[in-house]
Length: 353
Image (cartoon, rainbow, N blue to C red; front, side, top):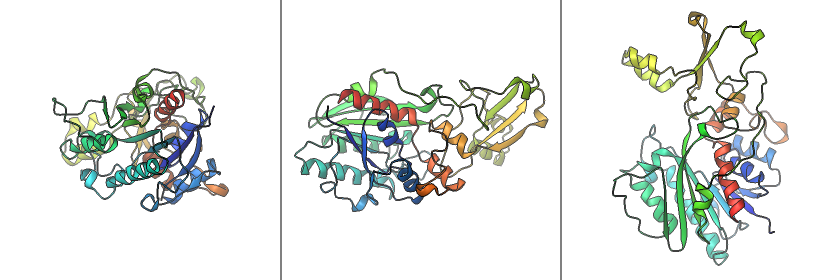
């Protein structure tokens, strides 16, 4: 069987290459401009070619690959951003990825890539009065795509145009992994098949996934599906851990909204709010009946890695074992993709091809 190969645009810390490697897919090259993520990826994939700035890449001159993945910048599409949409200076880089794919297809007479995978925030469904996602579908298919009669985009769907099979699906990280991840992280995953009708099989078929063993090490957060806290340490008291929505809390405090402020503290079994690159991720802890003795603290980079489904210490060091700062780790993790979701996509691609 021919070895499947992958190229990763907007690579970040190499989550798509990591997920692909689980299924025998070889990561060949990556494009990224942030120094810390590049160093992290070089450490884990020393043989992968780094292409740098996406605007300076010619898709017809780089090594052709079976699969191209890209989580293009989301700042202009996010519901908490400026909502400039695909016209924004950052999210507009989506079209650079499409250009590279088209250049590679032209240079290889339509042979490569076979599959493209795009990932982005849920806000892409609604930005620019819902026209941005229409533009995404039309860019992949080269066809006019009508707006849904409902006026909005469904969380899952499929279209076809000019022999390109496209499916999309909204995946929430909290429902993926073994044990399931304790983070609410809803992301759109779109699969385009340029040489067949396999996108729906890749994106909608149920399949078992590999998983990392759960760790019960230092600073392990107690959440649904994790190992909890030893009875000896709790002295038979019941530990309460509650993540809370920092933005909602600050807004409620500013408005002196007591109900909203209390509501920003979730229930014990609630998932952690989506980790963001530019904010502090906090949680509260106390023993039942001793709320006044509780405290609030920030998630550690290690705990953030666990919430993303990454191997522990994935972001701790760069090439030549140079330590990565906590600030750079938080930023990289907040911009990253949950591993189990990427793994599910890569498992489907490997199985289908």
